[in-house]
Length: 306
Image 1 (cartoon, one colour):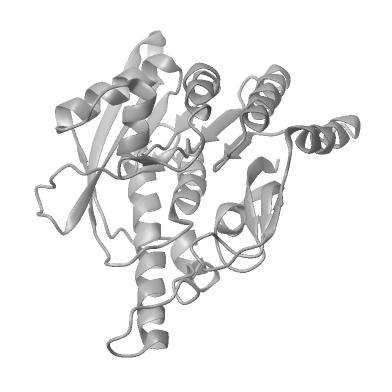
Image 2 (tube, helix red, strand yellow; image 1 turned 135 degrees about the vertical axis):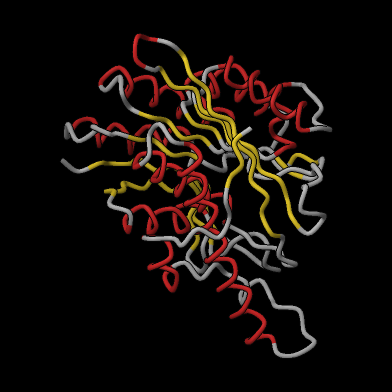
């Protein structure tokens, strides 16, 4: 039986963000992917110029209606990322609720893209929609530290704060929460960033069990676009293959990411030449070239169980 994902994300003609970042890795890891492009741009907005179109909530509804009328709206997973419009986001919530009504075991993986480094880069009126409507229907969420703080209203300054914020997010609905990056100081020094994850499962006899982990991830001195979309897609895949083992799922996800990023920065520096900073075009993720590392990532980063 095919495992099918509905991925509602941005699309670019050139480069790797949104669905371009997520679809190929999911297919390589055995999933059928149906893609709805929330935007269609010439390239990501890190370039000097970009052009394109934005899908409206009404247009999203028409596409979903077509899928439903043909009775091919059976999904195992929904994956969403960057969204700028409240009505579009509310339409996504309605779709998730309807699809979960058809398949109660459907898993909704949400990357709640709100901002980073203390600044929001979506309209502020999206925040209450994420808090009150999106997170409660999500099963897996992948915020960064700033997004976790926005969603919970809790400032994160220590690992203890982060764990408490994760528990607040669990209480809102999701069984799996991964804070993908943070400003917390790693035990390995300032050349590593800290990611934290937590998963609640129901054990034998109905008892709730929780696994919490920390990952210390080597930093790379470059700005990559599309890594969050790639992370969420690979976490979806690896939690599917390791449903009750967040440690292994995160190790494979992060290690796969590391292989992609290292291959990308090596290529970008070669193309830029000595003494020159790579351009956005040269820093496009080397996703296709990393196919083998996505399929079977050698573990480059190990998780610590808290």
